[in-house]
Figure 1 (cartoon, rainbow, N blue to C red):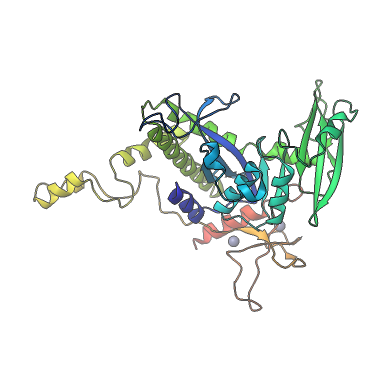
Figure 2 (cartoon, rainbow, N blue to C red):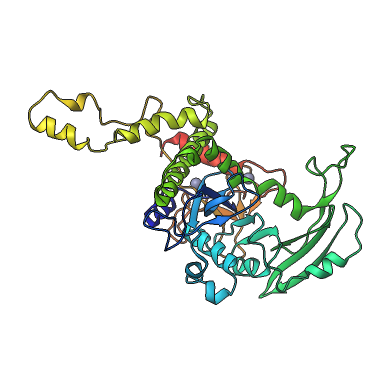
Length: 403
Ligand SMILES: [Zn+2]
Ligand SMILES: [Zn+2]
């Protein structure tokens, strides 16, 4: 697990919006320390999931590419309590979000974390704000310090909302109550939320209704992990029958790697405007799985039997199992490590390399690291009005240069 997460941190660079959610590895067998050698150490039941029973894997994904950057398997409650920050924060889910963020190497980079249901709390928002990150999410059960009752008792008509502002450690927080059938409660690290209109919020007659900007941010960003899970379910890892709980979870982790690889591939195809060779997740996964099973990915060593035969001077078995890259279509690609973060000095601003507008974000990888003589490559962040594509254009131009 550790080496998987550290490898992800090495090869992937997250965009500025991250989402947190869970993935299930279905398991109906024995659980716990007394369940025998093959039992799963812990199991969870989540009614709303397609596979409600099993190991729960919490993950953080990039909103733009749906690639998972950071994950953690949920262990037994008393083991979870021993993890970093748990005692310090007194809030297990806040501690987990911060751990996920640290594992993804995203602390202090002005990332926005959008979460789905289990993590929203005042504590999560505060801890993220103190780590230079932003947070948007609904508050359900963990409503300590949150004016939940007050928001729910507000007399609101359908589609109306109300909000409370607070300042914690110099950071603005906003609590929002929005009435749909009941009052839904949200928290965000921001100072204001204006009304917006778009096709996401329509009444029965299909007429656009105004709604708060926070909700728009939430609606348009929270589903990256769901999209990931949808791709994962097409691999049907849960259909792999085994009596060993650890093997079951391992299979799902292999699935996670495959989906990540597919998402990277989709991202390349889209950025470089190439024709996609593999149309679906399955079509992409099949040749990779075949290569994995025969141990012939990249420059992997030949299976021991083939080596032995070659050593014995038999017909060169190596020719039958060529140690080369994946199937046709797998070229060695240049990849970009561009990461767009706010300029460290508060007042720092410059003109965007792509569109020439003023911005406080810059690319850490393309800017020269030498102070003073250094050249800063400024770029618009992802949350510009009208979603300008400056970051994407910058990355494409760098990929085309083949640096
Ligand atoms: Zn760059
Ligand atoms: Zn720009």
